[in-house]
Image (cartoon, rainbow, N blue to C red; front, side, top):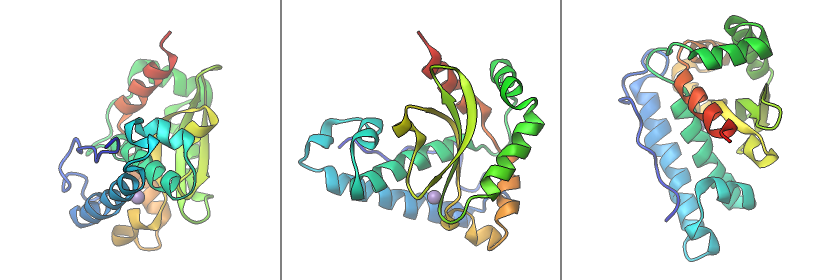
Length: 197
Ligand code: MN
C-alpha cells in the first residue's frame, strides 16, 4: 500500500474560524479519506502498489490519476495552512520579494489568480527548479504542476467542498482567510528539497 492518509499537524478544531471543525472533519475524514481509499483500491495488485505517491501521480491517468493526485493535492493543502500564519523564513522571503516584489504583493497576486479560477481546482505557488523562478498557477480538477516538472511550495484547495460549509458562495473571503494562515515553513522545506544539489 503506497498511498497513506497523512496525519495533520494540528487538531481539526484549531483552524477555526478560518475553517470550522465541522468543515475540517468533512474535508479530512470524508473527502480526503475517500481519495486515499479509492487510490488504494485501484493500485491493489498492480505495478503502482510499490511506487511512491508522487511517482504514481506522474505516471498514471484516468481514475487512478484523479484519486492519487487528489491525495497529493490535499497533503500539500493541509500542510500549507496553520492555525496562525508562520513567520516567513528569510530565504523564502528573499525569494518571494525577488519574484513578487513583496510578501504583500505576492498575497495580492495569489488572491487575484485564485479568484479568477472557474470551477473545481487548485491554486499553486510553483518553483521551476532549473531557473529557481516562482510562479502562481491554477489547475483544474485534480491536476498538479509536478507533472510539468515544477515543484509545488504551497497549494490552495478551490473545490467547493473545501469552503462551502463555512463560506457558501463567498469564495473570495475563504481565499483571503487562507492568506492569513499560510505555513511558510512548508514552502521553505520544499524549496530546499528541490534546489539541493
Ligand atoms: Mn478538498
